Each structure stands twice: as C-alpha cells, then as structure tokens.
Image (cartoon, rainbow, N blue to C red):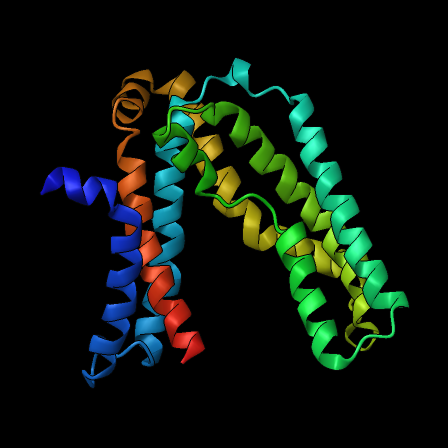
Length: 224
C-alpha cells in the first residue's frame, strides 16, 4: 500500500484536494469560502513550500550552482517564443476570444520554473543544484520581462515598470531566497543541523504533495 501511494502520490494529492473542496464546502464552519480558512491557507502554503525548498537546498552543493549553457538556451526560448506570440497579438487582427487565448499562451511560455521543480528533479535523481540555479535565474528574468511585455498587450492597465518589478520580486523572492540563505547559513554556521536536514531531503517531495493537494483545492474553488 505504501509503495502504491508513493508511485501515485501526485494524482492522489490532486484528487484529495479536489474532493476536500467539495466535502469542506458542505461544512458551514470550515468551508473554503470562509475568510479565516483562506487566510490560513495563504499563510500555510508558502511556509510549506519554503520548508520543502530548505530541505532541497540543504542537499545542494554551492560549487554546483554555477550557470550552465542550457540555462541560457531555455531563457532564450522563453524570450523568443513569448515575443512571437506577443507580436501576433499586437499586429494580428485577432478577435477578443483569440486574443485571450494567445495571452494565456504567453503566460504559459514566460512563466518561470516552479519552486517545486528542484524537489521533483531531486526525487527523480537529477541535478537539483543546476535546476536551483535556473529557478533563481528564470524568476529574475520573468520579474524584468513581464513588466516590459504585458503593458504592451494591455495598455489601459499600464503600471510603472519599477512598481511591477518590485511587486513581483516581493512575492517570489522571499519564497526562494529565504530558504536558500538559511540553508547556506546552516551549512557554514550550524553544520550538524544542516547535516540532519540534508539527510532528510527526501521528505521535501511529500511536503510538496501536501502543498499540491491544497493548491488543487484552491484551483477547484476558483473554477467553481
């Protein structure tokens, strides 16, 4: 049973999150629609993600964090593909419905690497250190590119570049940098604590499974 749950953890987490939404929605005091429940979820989910990243970052070797060529190729792909779609929106005579579809495509193409990517990579035996570097680089890239690109697509919603940049950084970087800085601090200042966490980096996957269930519940709520 344990092996079955490990292999099917991700679809099980999504099914659990979706089911939890419908079940809890029928309970008056713990419904997903209650403000205090939403406030708790909004606070708990980032803490959960930070905890999983801390476990992964404790396993990362600093000497392996150097940028690689494939980082540049992926960034160029994001830049050119989103630029092509943006050009179609700007210069193509699209109907409102098609414009919305192409805007959604830009969001998918320019979106940075998910914070859980390093967790999944480590679980699959890949190079979590290299992906950690790309996660940081891609988030910086998106924080700069989005404020430059999106005002061209929706001029009536134009916001000053620096305001958009700082808003994105304030949302993303505490989630990424705080666990990374803490992991480096533990490595050099509290090596016993660092070693304890590094030996348990596999638990990061299961923390992500919990976060996935919560996010799925929130997604289903938004769709409903």
